[in-house]
Length: 298
Length: 130
Image (cartoon, rainbow over all chains, first blue to last red; front, top):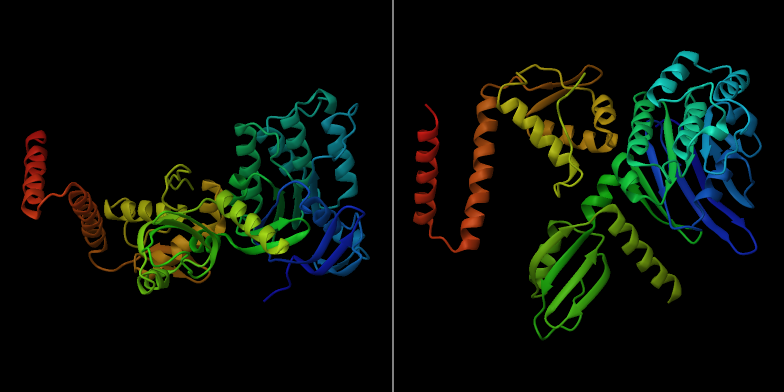
């Protein structure tokens, strides 16, 4: 296997009121990873560490084969970074910004930049302060994409976008990935965007990676199962149970280990399956976070 | 290349199944003939704006079912096997019949009642078409 684009091994970072606990992450070329977590989960901290903007207290961070933050100058040539709080100069035009970024990155692709200007329906002569929020996000993304980085690090790229702008942004991200040597890591609390375009999904909560897997596995293994429970059983015990609610003779089980064997396990326990429901990534995420918080408490 | 495939976010069916069904349908009706080159996994993912892993899964399962063949470095093609289009049509029919049988059971219909309904549907179709 070739070297991963991103590799985090046991990364820790402590602030006064927040801590990252032993974070492990791995992203291969050609993949999109969605980093999902509630506010304050550590998504931005993780991305900042990947960018070398802050340094970890301990653990190893390798990005595009470079050790971070030590070799960040070399790594950053091949990273495109977009974050919500990224400041463009309000008084300067988009064209000025494009010239500025082009002067820093030798790989700047002027043709591609012009194409993105048209696709995003932007006007290079406009000053940044005259742009709407959506236009500003698209301008920032254009500046990040047009030097054709091997890795895109996007902190909440779709937050606050209207549906059309969201569509345009996601389309451009997918388009950048037609080339299988590139990779994208993007954070979001919009599970819908993540579910749509990610290959790999990592759930973060309160500074910990609570789950990470390819998307199809998440969607295949998580199910909500409705059961009829005989009076002799108080709480059914089944593989991978994450949550159980029992009401009278009816139980609803959330499992993270659904497979055909699950039916046999139910039969064996004298339980009758009434319905097996698929779950959206959002439901999986919430169930995962809640179950993890319960475990951490107990 | 425009694939003509379309994914619905509101469909409760998982996206990889939607892709599989639509490809099977295109082959069944003869739009995509044996040997036809399918869009590459990455190209289809980009046009549909869905993850590469989802399209990959659909292609892998179609390959396992013998509907398409993937040649390393060349691309994916509709299988050359004889009568594939007919076979897919039959499979599609069986799937619909099985769904009808399921609804029949929910309604508590006896098998001969179900047959009667099917014959009725066939007659109606026959009358509509010249």
